[in-house]
Figure 1 (cartoon, rainbow over the protein chains, first blue to last red):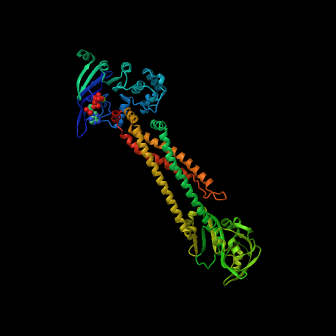
Figure 2: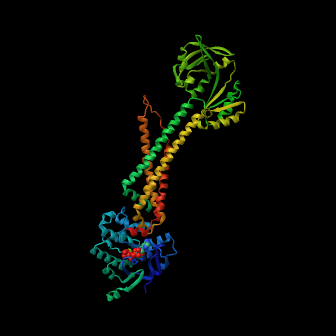
Length: 236
Length: 384
Ligand SMILES: Nc1ncnc2c1ncn2[C@@H]1O[C@H](COP(=O)(O)OP(=O)(O)OP(=O)(O)O)[C@@H](O)[C@H]1O
Ligand SMILES: [Mg+2]
């Protein structure tokens, strides 16, 4: 059986001190290596909160998160930074490319942050990633001089650059048209197969969600549905 | 270095804003360079006018009716031990009255060791008519006295000294020191003339010196006073020009004040602009942090921005300041074409101004640098 790359135990998140919003209530989840999971749920149900906590961008009010078997609540800011740099790739609804840099420079950014030397081999890998996301032609464009879809694909290549075990994506195609959305999900699945990367993707799109191996629905800060693809289709 | 490169890209991607800050720093630095050079130049020419052609350290006898007879050995034994003493000269002075056609005028007959004293007073340059005295009883007089008494070169006149007698002196030349007090009273001759008038042997009344660091004259004075003991009195120009010195001091202080305030306004300007930059770049900072950049490195981006701005501001400011100074010496001129004030371009001072600008800009960026570590990824993602 494949091992769990992410585990959440009794995770709670309460926002605010005077007016308390309980965004997450006692979440227990585990994600296997190389799994492809989609998270669905109504607006305000707590999906982003969950993903941000998994990605160590936010801390839970209670509970524990294990990434690669290591508990993250005991880590300091710098250790978390290193963990994120090495183990997690983020894709957000907005691409967040640095407009001052070219596409390929943006893709190389995680390597530069990790202080690795940008060797020929690494540049080769960056170029291969640009190929993979179909952007070889525009890789030397400044980030702003690309279309929305190209920017988002660049952000995907960037998330993959450090060969992280985990990719966390929060509505990665929310700003894109349906054709581009389809292309990007095909791309993510391909990466999942070829690079053995674990994916957790938040989406509003039922069709997209149905493509995942596992579907989790969050409702009012709790796991409402947690099923395999087959079970999900049968339920409909 | 990634933070440096990011800083550079941030600066070059908003060229207009960057140029404005650099220009701001440049103007600040140029004001510093110009005002500093102007005031230093002013001070140097003032000091030079005051002490350039006069004794800076002087030895006399404590009892001023006595003379110094061992002046040669004082020089060889003590004065030559001081590396900072550039020139040593001897003088013997005797006040008296110059008489011409019943007209009398008080004068100070000054016998100088001609060769040595020329190094201090530059008589050869001050001479406007005739020649320098070469033998006993030849004198030169100032242009004011010369005109007042209608004297003539080549003529002999009687000089009378109370209780001692009179001597005939021949005027061989006229000098102009440009200082009325001197030009109307000094009659300059050699040691022998005055010594024989007074009827003393080979003695002098003053040993006069110029030193390489005029502002250290008081230190040399104290050293000499210790060497020579209580029979002698050593004085220096600073004691005699306290007013000038306090004036110079006030000028220096106001110059420093100007520089402090200019620096302060530059610092505030940079700090506020960079603080806005942090907000402008919060998206970039957010994603960099999500990708694992550490707070320290994120701060370093803004420190580097400050440093770069400081460096370019300093370069621009020094160029602008030197340009301004050059224009000043070309356009603010006397009728004869010489500059009103000779600016003093001190490379060390300019380096200091540049250094302060770089330091100030870097310090100013500490505030935005600190602010940058407070930016949270979550906030950035939410406000997308
Ligand atoms: N910083 C915050 N302070 C207070 N409450 C917050 C904060 N962030 C989120 N919340 C609340 O937590 C709950 C969950 O928010 P979250 O952003 O996780 O929802 P979501 O499922 O991602 O919604 P959407 O689909 O609209 O993105 C919401 O009720 C929201 O109002
Ligand atoms: Mg959300």
